[in-house]
Length: 344
Image 1 (spheres, rainbow, N blue to C red):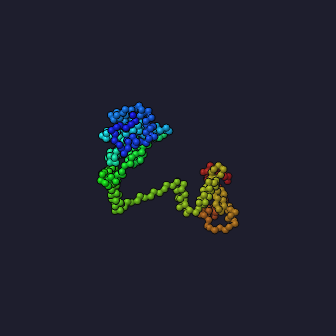
Image 2: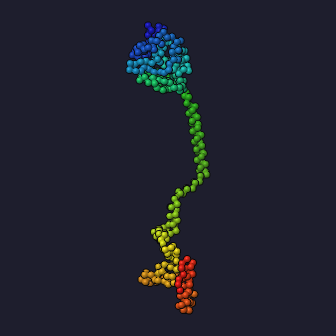
Image 3: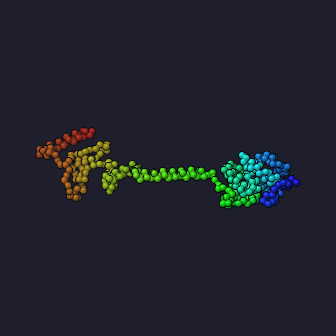
């Protein structure tokens, strides 16, 4: 007796309301513990208390097909068949699982017009809800997704939903007004902002054409100090005498240079000048080199090699006076250098 439909219930879709749920699932509900303990002798007034206690929605789960409390309450509502006003109050309730229970029952028993009229406003509800899948695990979903699945899909919560007419057909028959989406205002704002952005871009391009922007000068890449010194050297010597410059630097590092000869104590003797033609001794006499003997002299002697007027005058006076003068000059130079004087 507890599993039968009430006597004054009306048929839904031409059949018993309980038959909207498949027989296998319906028999599992009758055998479940929640149906026997919580749904026994349940009236429409007490149904609200059970609906508020819901914490998730779903169909059946597990290998032995266990029904969820949500599905048990749906079957109890089909059995007692509450008034339409109670279902509307369920849909308008702020509790999300009570609202989901009323929406599911409206989809099972209501007409096409009632489904679109009462369920479409719920698409603006974006609250999160918990759903239990067939494996018994909980998944996170949203109220608008659940309502959209009721309007579009054929099976929800493991129950086959009755067919309803397409919204387009109802609009063509003037039975239903065109739907006004809550996103239309946002789309209008986006389109207006896009138009304003396009106008700003066109104005900016026009200003660029009228007054072209000057290009900023390209900065030269910084180079290393070694590269800069090499470039300066190439510009100075023509870029073809690096080896000659290197050889000259090596020659400058040596002991001898073009200006004189250093002795063992590091003192330079300016009188001992070495050039390509020979070496001068302490008396100022030049010994021609081997190279000068082999090749002829091609250029005039240096001005420093020519005898001064004083020397030429003393040569006329005699050789003794010349030797004496040379010894005196050598002694004076050696005294400046810190050397011992020559003997007469």
